[in-house]
Image (cartoon, rainbow, N blue to C red; front, top):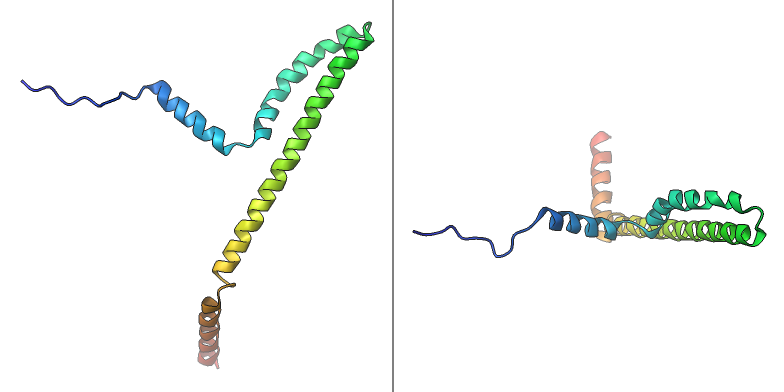
Length: 120
């Protein structure tokens, strides 16, 4: 009596979700996680109004929130610059693959001349 061959390692649902999380983590910029952390930070910072009688504690909490928002804005600006840089590279590579290629330009010019001759 033969038993069916078992796979070497069983893949669990947890492993599938973990791989998907790791893959999604690679695609997302850091500012995404900072934006996700913003509501908890603001909720935790809402207690600073209870500390108005203690100016040092109030200033420390307010400073921490301002620092967090500053880091968030800086990271968002860096991510924006990276996205724009990548878009510029993609546009340049597309241009070089088409209109920047001399062989393509020659073929395009020949086709345009053929079409002009056919219409006249």
